[in-house]
Image 1 (cartoon, rainbow, N blue to C red):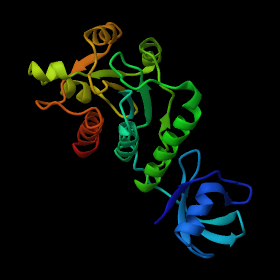
Image 2 (tube, helix red, strand yellow):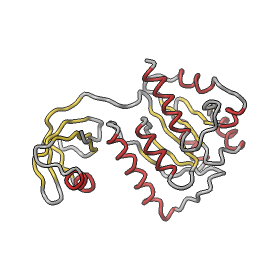
Image 3 (cartoon, helix red, strand yellow):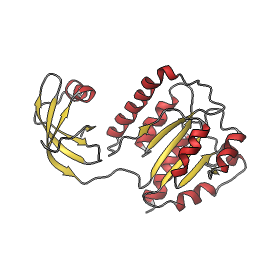
Image 4 (tube, helix red, strand yellow):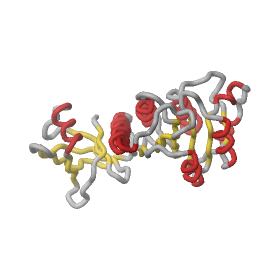
Length: 249
């Protein structure tokens, strides 16, 4: 069943849907009055709803039943990606959302080839946020992950102070055969904790970046014996988190 994130009016026990969601429901899905959809409120409540009225640019749906459901990871995971080339960040956001990430922060790394254009920032971030929203709807999540503007190393370090566990995915650890750090970090997490993971761009993180992060409580970890692409590594990490905190418990 189709799912959408929209504002809710408790006074009317109904949703008013406009804009892109309206067009998708009416023009793409070709739904009609009395068809049912699932809508999610800003406070993560899901409801089975019935379409009661369709006008030229708005439709109204009535709540049939509030649902008890949750497809969220038991911890909050923030993915920090060294700004990659092309549309790789689109893929990270889309698939990372499906796998349960809570937040995405692009990181202006020393080896990032792409130069961030402030003039196009709002448009770019808006596009990333739309990708996250659509992926959250597709994967039946109760939360749309937030996507922040790219940050510098110093800004990232300041923001990291509030996280319970902080990890660097560092390929040099893989080359040296390190195996335990990631396992121990994941085993230390409990329900409600927050995890911040930093991934480098295509050229990886510099030694200076890693050392600076380690000085502020980050733990350098291997993601196994194989060297993963910048768009693959976050998906590996999120899968490992799900296995440790959902499938093993």
